[in-house]
Image (tube, rainbow, N blue to C red; front, side):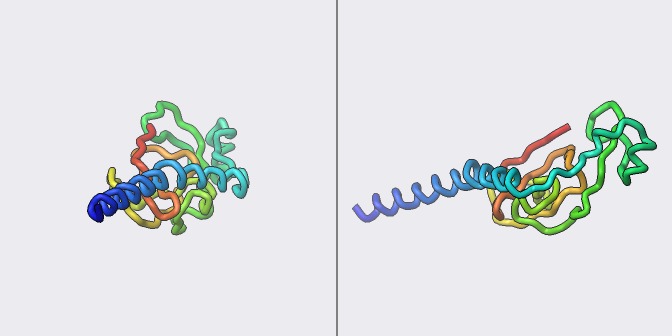
Length: 134
């Protein structure tokens, strides 16, 4: 009977951890972003290289997107974080090659609001599933 209780306890802890990592932490992070984040410009409103550079933006192509466009660097780029609400972009990125299994870690604030490539977000100190955006 003790072994069954122990097994059920371990299974319960695994389920709670899975729910925290995949559902609760990411959604709580998004709520905090919506509540506390100031809107920052992504640079998409600048349609020419001159307007972009005049507003301290970086003009060029990114990812597999075929057209050049403007992205405004964020002032907190590279700042340590444990959740997206701590960054102007609303995203905290794990600074290593991603893993499918969750780990406890801190991340870094990204350079732009528009992120290309494969990344792994950090929500309240835990990595989330890897995402590739191109």
